[in-house]
Length: 541
Image (cartoon, rainbow, N blue to C red; front, side, top):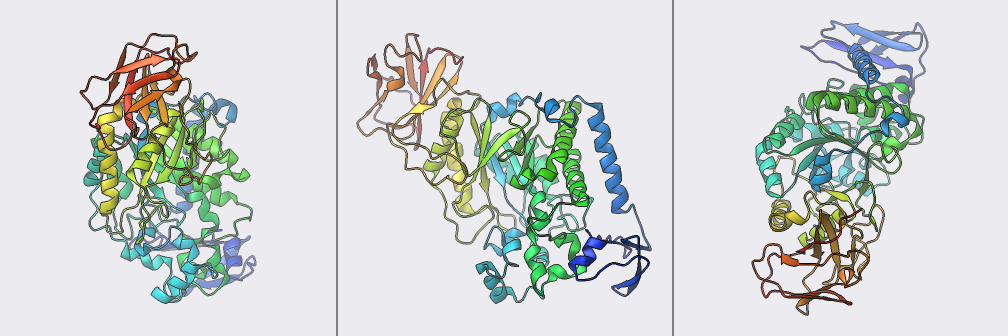
């Protein structure tokens, strides 16, 4: 169900399927002539295809070649397209050690600065975004989402400046959005003209970021939200809008109802696009949004994972697939929770993706930012439970990062400069921590917990060294770690040394049946959570 318009020096190829004609209220009849933009086209056996003055390889041939290549790489192994084979996957050490990464939601969405799902909601007639759009830009038949693309110029974008900031923030990996639900790839996509290289900024954003991030010694990843594109523009099919115009089907199509059956053409295109990201940019993480959990995606997820893991074996790099819910078996990839956390240690590493803003992923004119204190607390809590934090920012359409977001990242970086030893390269201890403040488990609970107190402690470990991280400065001038009480079954070792990271003060401490009690110095070493280095303790089993 697609129409593809390829422009190469004013030469075009048009391909329309019978499904596409149904979108626009026409029934396709074999051996019937139709008119499209003044050209006569012929339907043959339900498929209408016309090429006139064709230059270059058609998309269909490119797609076939890509799918054939994927099959060849999968056939070579070592991984094959089955859950049994894929569960032999092992998470790379660099990711286990990294603990903190940066997510970047940036694209045409950023122009409106109004709503993360503007591209969808502007076509839903009962949405406040619909009303805002009509009042601000005019009817969708005259000004559609496509008309934001020339406004997305990224004229101030500097990939090296971004990468330098992320490095200062203490990030070990960076994941820009390669393609969001809107169907506008931020990279040099071979399967559509509607991409950032050919329109808008006319730059390979993903490619520039990949190079800059690697120059700073960080790991590069990319996210794909393409699956949701199947239904993202379906609202525009229900009234007079540009979504119904066949000239723009390369951006808006297929615009099907969310509960409709996915077809092979869309799934093949999804696989080819995702594999192209792998081949062009060699990301060490591929992050997927939730809709890949649809049953129709299952064989495609298996094939993609086998392809990606096999390509990584050729590159001699460790790579990661992030998934949500139950899209992959838990050992075949790494679970990701959107705006959420766990209440206990998970034996398998997992990831939280959340944003510096409570109310947005993309740039918004009225953001509600989280405090650095709360973000540091979340990072420590997540790491103590064998997790990794992927923290999102939303740059402006011109390519600048809002000053508030830049300051948040720099403050996190300052904290990590003092306390990174208690985060990077650590592993969870026997228990994740202690204290009265409970984290609310599950997705979309990132603002549900109460503020941490001076009694809330989280543990990380490296060998026989334990880091007890107080999530607030105790008001009474002392910290008692109850888990390290004399006779505790958690460690039978005699503790000999207690230090406070970032402080040169010699600490006085005692250990008895109530716990390990540390007298705090008069001066704090940092603004937020406070990491005490304690040794020796029993190793984690």
